[in-house]
Image 1 (cartoon, one colour):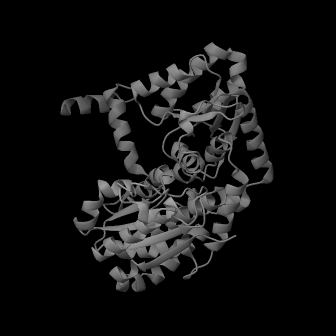
Image 2 (cartoon, one colour; image 1 turned 45 degrees about the vertical axis):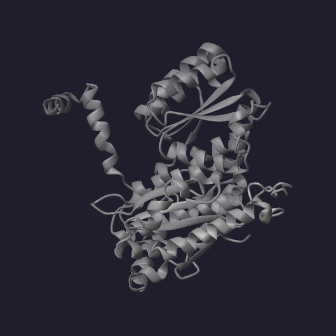
Image 3 (cartoon, rainbow, N blue to C red; image 1 turned 90 degrees about the vertical axis):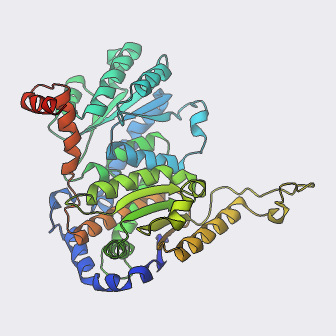
Length: 445
C-alpha cells in the first residue's frame, strides 16, 4: 500500500545550506538507529518491533480485548506518558468525534483514562461515573510504583472489587508490566491477573505498538493487525539512507532548520481527530530531544480552530518557528454545503461543495500565508485516516525521532530531567527514604 508522503519544498529553502551540509550526519544517525551503535541503544527494541510482532501475540491481545468487551461497559486504561498517550492518540483518531456522548453499547465499551494526572476532582468524578457500572481495568506500569497511575489503580481496584467481588474482579483486571520485577508484577502474580509484558528495551514513549497501546486500542474495537502492518511497511521504507527515506529527510531538515534559528516546531493538523496525536508527538520529541541545553520545542495546534487564536502569532510573531502539517487526503464521510434561498450569510458560492474542499483551501491558503510570512512548512500527507495509515505515521515519527536526536548530539532514549519534580514531590510528602531531601527542601521554603 502507499506510504505516507513528505513534501519539504516549502521548508528546505529556509535552511538549504544546513540541509546539504547535514547529509553525512543524517546517514550516520540512521546507521546508529538501525545498528544499535549509538548512546541509549539498550532502548532500541522498537526499531524492529513491527516486523517481529507475532500473530500469536496479536491473537492473544484480541482474545483478551474481546473478554473485556463482552463484560464491560467501560474499560479504564490506567497509565501516564507513553502508557496513556499512544492509545489515546489512535483511539481518538479512529473514533466518532462524539463517541463520548453516546451510551455504551453491548460489546462496545467506552475506553476511559486514569492515572495520567493527580486531579482529585477528576478521580472522584471517574469513580462516580463507574459506580454501579460494569467496568474493567488495564493497568500499565513497568514498576507499579509511578505515583499517578499507582494512586488511580489503588482507588479503582478497590471500587471494582467492592462492586464485582474480589474473585470476579481478577478477570476484569489486566496488567501490562515488566516481565519479572516490580510491584505491579508481584501484585499480578499474587492476585492472578492476566498480564502482558512491556519489553525492557522499549521506553514508554515508543511503546504504542507493544501491548501498552495495542490492548486498549483493541478494546476500543479497532484493528491492531492493520495498525502493526502499516508500521511494518514504514519500518521497511525507512531502513535505507537516501531521499526515499521520509524519516531521514524529516530528521535532517528539522535539524537544519534548528541550526538556522528555528527553535520551535508546531505540529499542525486540519482534522480535529488528530488532536491527541499531537499530544503523543509532543511527548515523543520533547522527552527525546530536550536535554543538555538543546532541543526544538514541540508545540501542536488544531487548524482551523487555532488560526482564530494562535494564527496572529504564527503569522507575524517572532520568526523562531516552523510548521509540520499532517494532511489527510480523503475524509471517511462526505458532507456537502446546502443551498440557501435567502443567502444572508453569503455562502451560496460554496453550495454543493464538500466541507473538506473548503478545509483544503483553508489548508493551502494558510500554507501560502505562513510561508510568505517566514514560516517554513513541512507537509506530511496520508491518503486516509485508518489503522494502516496511523501505523505508518507512528513508526515514521518514532524512527525520525531517533535519527533526529543523534543528529542533535543527545541520547534520544533517556529522560533524566523527568526525575527532578518527582524527587522534590517525594521530599515534600516526606516519603520514607527521602529524609535528607525533605530536610534540604524545607530549608528552601
